[in-house]
Length: 231
Image (tube, rainbow, N blue to C red; front, side, top):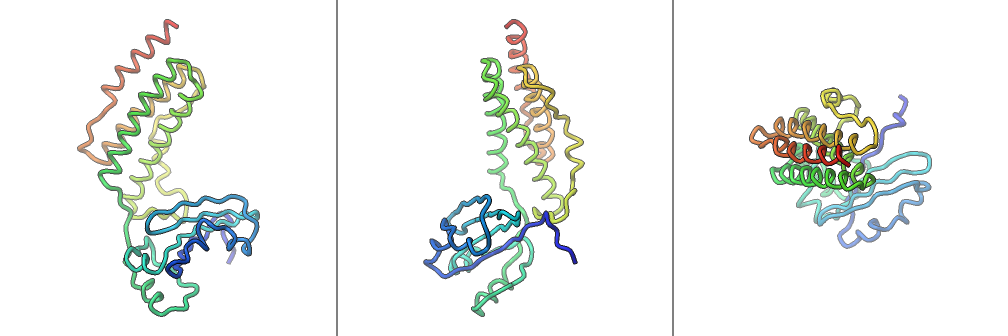
């Protein structure tokens, strides 16, 4: 059996209470595994997340939790394979952990909607004011938010946010009419316009009660195009 060189290793690590500082944000404990090429780290009240790429391009995604936190908040998307455990109660904890399906709250959706349309407005104003570096960066971020909503739809339909084999719902890309044809002011405005139209479609598919924003936003685009045509 040949290993997939493009796959990573997902690891859940339960540690003793009070020992988190040895694993996060410390990186010393990772050195025996190889030379670190790049790393991302973040934490909340329950877990620490460490994503590390080694110089030979092995990638490990670690979720680290103390035992007490794991006992109260332990949920998995898929059933885990226990590699090593010195504690029978921890082993039982892992075996009995409930499975958790991917979920996006109404608050998360509302936040995505508000962020999208707020930054759409800023992208247009920056374009008209000739700040093309900022406006193109914002326009590309709008495209990314459309892709994020596509992934939400994919995960909801498939019942998981873990896709070990690529290609699942890639056809969503083909349905989106978003293209960057250049970096002029008009090109950036066109990109923002395309993203706005597509976001409305995706948001309505996510929640049929969503009120489409583009009909109002289009008035701003008309004003911007008028100003750009006379400048």
